[in-house]
Length: 260
Image (cartoon, rainbow, N blue to C red; front, top):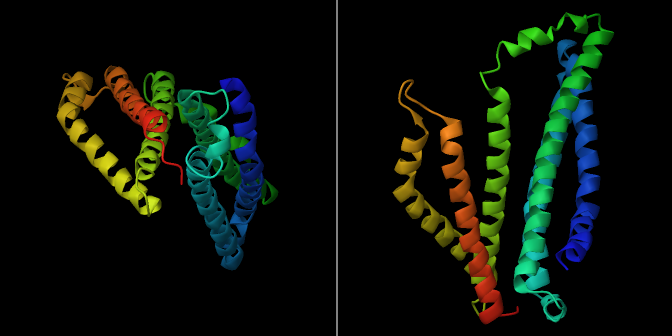
């Protein structure tokens, strides 16, 4: 049943996000193409395209957060919840559906951000080529000099930790919303207050275990934090918090559901 929910949930967010991604990519390419204008003292075009790119970027970040909140709150705690909770679907499946969809679109947004950065560079390279700069002078071998040892392993570990952090953050938001909906009135303010409490709880727990985490990842010979050694403790910590928030949502949804 979870698969059927995802077939509806993921495209539902995509219909709103994909047009914004397209606009983001176009403005990034325009920003790259306009870089030569700065050299020709026509800085207005660069400022204008840069401002437009910033506005679109901000709009996408805000829209992503709003959609994550709305899709969860409206579907499981708002007006749509009356219909969704009569479906032969468990509370865990409902929460998992929203979590997976939100994680997918946050990761897609991050990937699109990388693509837009590449498009800015591509636009600049196109203009540089048009104005006589030999792009072939760039030697890929020179770039490898700047890469640290075991860069590939570190990159994979960072990507996994990033995804785990996204999962934890989304569950933070869901837990705060669910706790906030226990209030009879002013559920939005209650959810904001609950989110602050969730952050305080995580900070207190983190303060207890962070020294242990740092000691596990510390390379005593070089006096630096070894990402590989700290990887599993950090990963376990992220998923442990996410699991706590997940079961808080599940319990409240099953035992103390208060539909707005």
